[in-house]
Length: 444
Image (cartoon, rainbow, N blue to C red):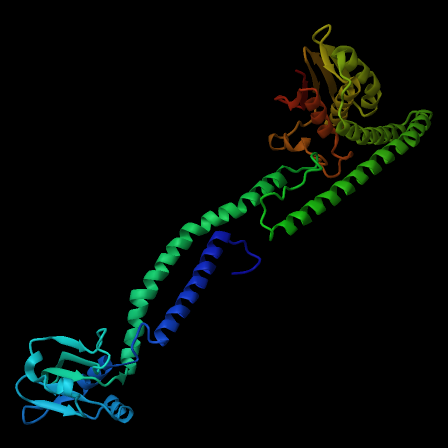
């Protein structure tokens, strides 16, 4: 798995936990197996198996022992060995000195399938012995021996397989089930603080600063990351505050030279150059005021008063009318009511209306009529331009968004309008119209 790709913490923790548990289990079982706790590497059972594989029938109808590899090893490594092999018909093959306790058993155990001797508590003085009937190439024979032998390789492998199947795999299955249940619970508890921090981080935006991620309930391993994020947020807040302060100071400083430039352009004789210069200076003035309005809105508006939208709209149209005329438009104003009172900030509402009329001048095609109509509790601004496409009717209110890359302005005007209307409990919408653009300021 690539380190750059996202992964599931639950899945990775489950497999790593199961792997660690599996390794520990195999090591424990391996130690028990190697120490003889789970498997007898030297036992009389091994001797019985070696003898069983070495027995072969002979021509006289009896049986003998082949010199198998295991048989040779047994004879070389166990010099004091003893065993007795009987067929129940009087035939017998023995080797070594049989202890007196077992020499006289004879056929007394013919009806017993298998037996152990000398393993019981209190039999410490009796030699250990093992008796078992086995199926061989020479038929069913009884083997009695007390000499332990090393297990052949195939028995060791068989023992390992049985331990894996009967012990390791069942325990590993139980461990996997436990890890499957426990891992999500552990991860959920550990990640609870992270999820709360993620929700906090998701709520942070450019308008809501000063928010810090809570470190309560966080694992100590994650706390340094949370502190680093909070430090980064603090530095961003400080940088943003400095940037806003710079923009506000720059806007204040620009007011004076723009006012001087306006006066000098007004003294020029009427011409197309003067018209273009007037529009450019007006755009610079609007941008400067927008920058100041942004700072003003961030501080909040707390001096609302009752005001009449009809005379307020007339003042705006008188101020911006010359700019519309010089851009090639006709201007129309109409009031559908004698008076419509709202509670708000007159400077902010004038700025919002000015921005909408300026938007109509910029995008109205430089021909036709820009009409402003005052309705009860609303103001409607119409132009005869191409209008706003449906897919852009939300995006145009985003900061710095411009429909045309070559268009003038900074893309802040409509954002300011929406913020101002929001502060007044109202909204600004793009009304449906067969042709041209139509914005509507709706007050509560």
